[in-house]
Amino acid sequence: MTLRAEPARAHDLRGALELLGRAELSDRDVSEGWGHYFVVREDDGRVVALAGLELHGEDGLLRSVAVEEDYRRQGLATSLVEAVLQRAQRVGLRSVYLLTTTARDYFARHGFSDCPREAAPPAIRESWEWTSGCPSTAAFMQRKVG
Image (cartoon, rainbow, N blue to C red):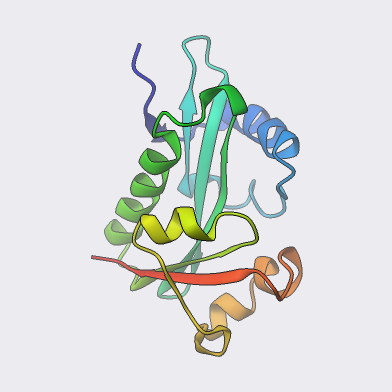
């Protein structure tokens, strides 16, 4: 079976939260935004990768991109990020932003560009990720939608 990004379902949440824990990423607000998350499942239904979109007014925040170590370098993160960007376009967002301490170069290769922190939309600045989730040294990046 070919592994691919699919919309997350309710029964995926537990496995996704466990994956975030193993990846040392926060699960804060993940449950609340679960309707805009995507997962990659193994044949047995196990979640091996995920990514999500938080809606903040006319903009979105890419969250929780995680891939199990044994499944890396197969393009799963790329397919998840593209699924998130397609969802952002369908719901009419202008831009998708992200904060990262470890993957700036990865996201730059996938169309995200550095964005001055002072240019962050007010709704993004009010998010938990902005205020508490990531240090002020995290790269802040943007990709226009559409």
